[in-house]
Amino acid sequence: MQRIDAPEILDSEACLPQDAHAVLRDIGRVNRWFGGVSTTQKMVERAAQRICTKHFSLLEVAAGLGEVPEQVREKLARHGITLDVTLLDVALSHLPVGYTASIHLNGPSRSVVADALTLPFGDGSFDLVSCNLFAHHLNPEQLLQFVKEGLRVCRRALLINDLVRHPLHLALAYAGFPLMRNRVAWLDGLTSVRRAYVPDEMRRMLTDGLPKQMSPRIEISRYYLFRMGVIVWKTPTA
Image 1 (cartoon, rainbow, N blue to C red):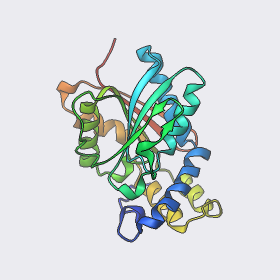
Image 2 (image 1 turned 30 degrees about the horizontal axis):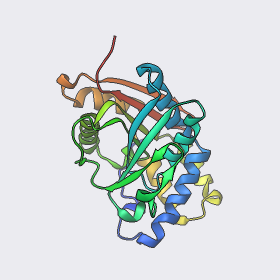
Image 3 (image 1 turned 135 degrees about the horizontal axis):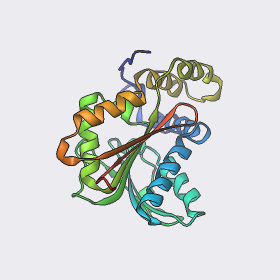
């Protein structure tokens, strides 16, 4: 199945700010039901196991309403792993209202409006940089730029949670229309599957495209219902 890179309605002026949250709430249901939350949770657990720590600061890029990191935080707290989360999105209308002042289960959270390709943070500002359903929005050059920025800003690892392009996945997305309350979310879901990468493409892009001096170690795993989890470690270990 060939990759087709086409724009999504949520990213365009055709999606009014007042409609964005309705679309994002549908995306939130997809993440809860079909592997989005569990994929990020497993990657953070992998980081905790590898690094031997139970506390992380985490920057969630293209965060939208921030439902994935919030649900992951609640689940991990039951296992003694804590997350301090900062949300970042290019559109203020995508972020949850009042999030900067809210207090959650494991401490304060905040949000930032900024471009993911030029992150407004210093080197090593967060333990982990994470994104969910964002990588497929980027062409290969943009994806490499984001990965470089993520590695610059993180101390430990960059976590990429995204879809896997596959004909069966596209068929399931078509069949999922009755589950979606918003038609834009359904249409964008079809576009997302078509423009998603597959693990071999992702590994090749990162291996060939990142500067050798960065020497990252890349782990790519498949998860429930055509999800891909990519961990790009900041520094390799034996």
